[in-house]
Image (tube, rainbow, N blue to C red):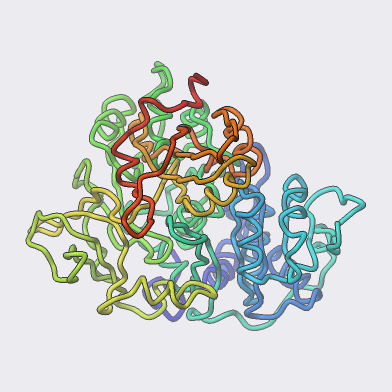
Length: 530
């Protein structure tokens, strides 16, 4: 375990890697399911070389470097190499494309990006009018045409002189991750090093990690759960991380069995996908001792216990902005609930969303959070000061999530107060969907909103209500085809309905609550193609 885990001034993951490399250089850290391993010592050496390459490219501490790569050893090298130099890793969702990606590249202002070769075409297309992004390091075969961007070879890190400069400070910004609501474009969360490390510290305490554990990671490393809660926890604890490039429900148990994994996290509908697999005789023949599942539906917890024989299921509640201030506890089952406040580092109340006054135990209110330690929280939204101020009021961060808190402190997430869409673990900005799909000729007005998923734990499905221009003929299938071409996969609508008009308030605001109440029973359904 990291020797300074109780000292917030030393919560710096590149420093943690340096210590692990010193203490156990030959111990295995990264183990890819499809092959490839990295010890702590080799990881530290590689990270110094990547930092050296970035230095040679004139990247300085504090500079933004966009990163768009799939789960893998190169992503780990790039992420920690950026951090070792003291630069800022802008973690881009690998499903992004078009206007979604263009906004994030433009907002972060990165002059350099590190991109997997398979993702380069969508980056070049999205960045065509982003003048700030001048150079792209390509992690595969180099194409001939960079479309106005200078293309560099990722393999150059191996020949760089290692960086030996000072480590960043706990209060320095380590990372930017983008998160969405419905109003306005996605927001870049400015995440200090201490904030990033605290995710893993909370995970270690919640699941009682020991040196005997092996962590199975299938969630994407461009999000805080996979990168910081899980991979960060393995770095702090000095244990192996077994990583699959992309989640597979059919291989979930096979991987856990083959690699002797003892701990894993699940999110949203992934638990439902695992449980939908046909039962097998070997379902209980594994070493998995605890699963962190959020949201943790009671029926899912019961199924994991009875079918797979899991001893412990824990959950939690958090956001990119606020870390994970609520965790479950080993040995204290609370199916359906998130857990108890991680009160060593956070304060959490459930309050009236209009007055911010705490509600009585058991009553519904908004979950409000604030940190107890410096820099264990976001410092704001990048280049969006008005959105930062909007999120804070009366010295509390307003999550926009509704929940309850019992007299003994058990917190349960109920629903979202904000009119936002969450599908398969991704927050989706309705405004970005509307702007992208609304570019189709013949669309007069469009509204994107959430309807309930029919997958247990699947959160929302995305629905579009569309009004055609006078004289235009629109078909739902044509709208869906256009959506598929301009939206990330996680934001593709399942339901589409053509309406003569959208319900609006007296001031002309679309009434999404009225649209949600209509439901999707009369809409075109992607899964039925009817």
